[in-house]
Image (cartoon, rainbow, N blue to C red; front, side, top):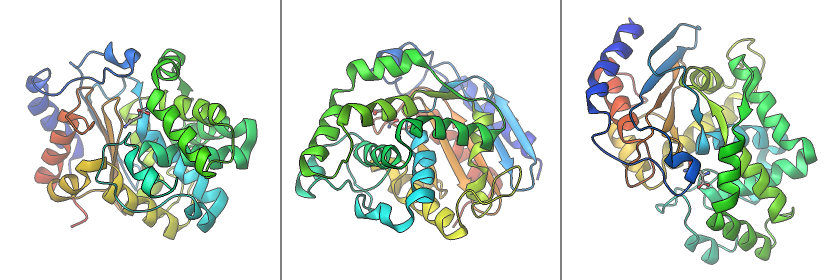
Amino acid sequence: MDFQAVLDDIDAQIRPLLGTGGRVASYIPALARVSPQQFGIALRTCEGQEAAAGDATTPFSIQSMSKVFTLTLAIRGLGEALWQRIGREPSGSPFNSLVQLETERGIPRNPFINAGAIAVADRLLSLGGDEALAKVLQMLSSLCREPVHIDAEVAQSEADTGFRNAALANFMRGFGTLDNEPGRVLDVYFKQCAIAMNCQQVARAAGYLCRDGAHPYDGTPVISETQARRVNALMLTCGTYDAAGEFAFRIGLPCKSGVGGGIVAVLPDRLSLCVWSPALDGTGNSHLGRMALELFVARTGLSVF
Ligand code: GLN
């Protein structure tokens, strides 16, 4: 398939729509300053064929897309024991919701809502201590074969305004389901969310998820085949929060979104894909990114269903 032509067509269809719908995340001040007039798309097949269009090499804040990679590290380090602290069910609630944590006694519904990702960061701290964050960056750099770093301004902006996340961390600590001091856990969480990458790098980095857990460049196992299948299952059911049903219905690919406007998608055994456009819909997912994924699936017929 001529993927370059497909992505060029999608870019041509999306570009005139820039600025017509959705709003950039404003609850993190550093993200509110990002221009919504940007769209990028990139993919990499399991065989290493690549295609990209639009602003595919412009770095953006990966935000909750980081949760896929921290989950991968936690699964690799802890195996099944991870699930003693985190559930695997869609929440049906917004990503930063506190309500379920109360009734479910400090065990987050899944690793992709904020509470779940904060619980994963806690596990990474217990596993790696002060090296926890460096290990996330190392993994991402190794996966996309380029240096990856944290946008310090975004990280600070999140730390200054992340009161809900602080509430989630303290709540879990109160239930005894967070082992490390909430401030330390939040530091890891805010910084992982503030990692800057571009569409091309993210599409490359997610390559292990379409290759049964094998590293996209050197083929060494990042996680096992079963573990990769499970990460994909969680992305499909929980990766786009309370829009996950709609994403499965309209797109049918495991996806993980972030409030920076990125969405990473995986078609197992075939390709990994990243779209980015900063304006978000009401569920915190990229408005045009979602539309671009729909166009991609309609045009190529590629979906898990
Ligand atoms: N850093 C963001 C937050 O904690 C991540 C949320 C997201 O991307 N959905 O609110």
